[in-house]
Length: 194
Image 1 (cartoon, rainbow, N blue to C red):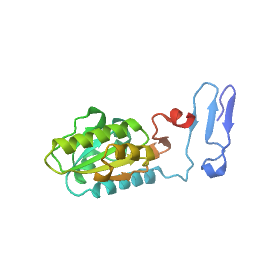
Image 2 (cartoon, one colour):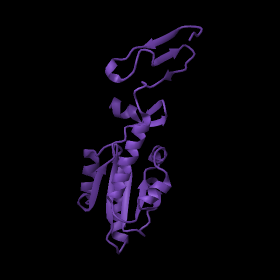
Image 3 (cartoon, helix red, strand yellow):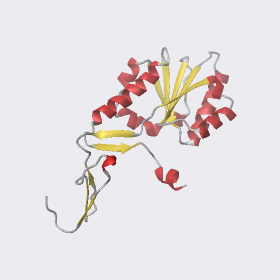
Image 4 (spheres, helix red, strand yellow):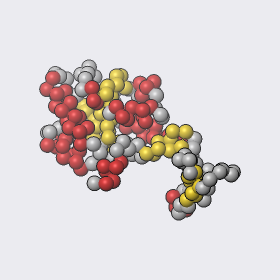
């Protein structure tokens, strides 16, 4: 393959999983990256789907799912709404809309555990749910990609940590296509810089 002008080829260490020809930076500003032929993106997608469905199956019966809006797209890459319905999800609400329905006994929150404002919003919705409903709800929180001490502390200070079940969905890489992976981070600069 020949291209006019200068180009920069990068070599990554073999443990990263790339070969010599993987990264190619032409001078016209386009960046191309291909995955190592040994990486199975379907397996990554299947594992993410299995992990999510196992967590939903752990909550018995019908449930309302409250999901962070920025996670709806990535989750939709590997789990369709009809599949979620097969695992007991009755209705889906966005966390940011603050419109949780109290019709189901089981409520599952799915949000990024690395954003303190999500923890505060979830704690407020759980408290409102406990006060506004005569039914005793079973609440589960699934943090993506991991559970953090900050969120535990916020939920504890709100007085709801002991009343809920807390899990983690280790969703780090998302396959966008057979040869393209993306990281599921909205604002990595603030996390890495600070």
